[in-house]
Image (cartoon, rainbow, N blue to C red; front, top):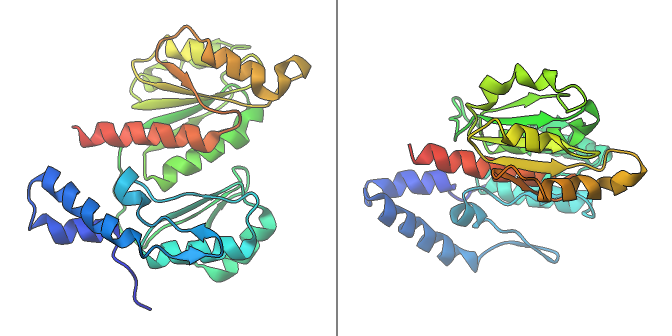
Amino acid sequence: MTTSPSLADLRTALATLYPDERRLEQAIRHLADAAQSDAPQIDDVDVDLQRESRCGFPEVIFGEGKSTEMIVRILQTQQQAGQESLVTRIRFDQVQAIQTEFDHVIHNDTARTIRLHQPCENPVSRGGPVIVITAGSSDRHVAEEAMETLRWMRIDCELIQDVGVAGPHRLLKHVPKLQQAAAIVCVAGMEAALPSVVGGYVPCPVIGVPTSVGYGASLHGITAMFSMLTCCASNVVAVNIDAGFKGGYVAGLIASRAARSL
């Protein structure tokens, strides 16, 4: 079966014609726009194969509410187009079905994600490092979703766990490493004090991810979210409750853009 050229293939083919980076990006965008009308449809789903050319990374599949058949067909379309695939919030029975359809499925049960990469002998990092840090081990499932997102984006990343403010001494030994990060994803539930503390030590953006971990007054993550939104550390921002993907994706964009500017 003939496959569509990937963004990397287009960039390589057009680079000799457009040595100027700005004109090269314009040419790729024009070609992608011209192909938009031919975007494949699966039932009521328009598969956005031009997302990478517009936004830098392919479309991500949110697994909840989608049938296994639909996820498989979207993955087939992305893979045939030479794109790399990430599925979030996927059930284990769906993973088993997908593993029978594709080789080299990377499954993270804790994160509830799968990744499919295009064959590449020497994958090149697109930036980093990004450090994902958790207040407690109960936050790990959200942190792992952020990590899998960063790995799919090919961003150098590392996970540091269980350094919340109940034992503040645990954080201090990691501060030198945190200060070298391009961005930090800080995952915390309960009162979510950790992003404020981390933000006061580092010169990079800190993306707070509130989790629904905690007892009654934590309100299933609303207290943590309000804490992050009202944080006085000026380099801290927040995403939605339990949104490990969103925190990882934003951090990955920051890291990849920073690497391109070097």
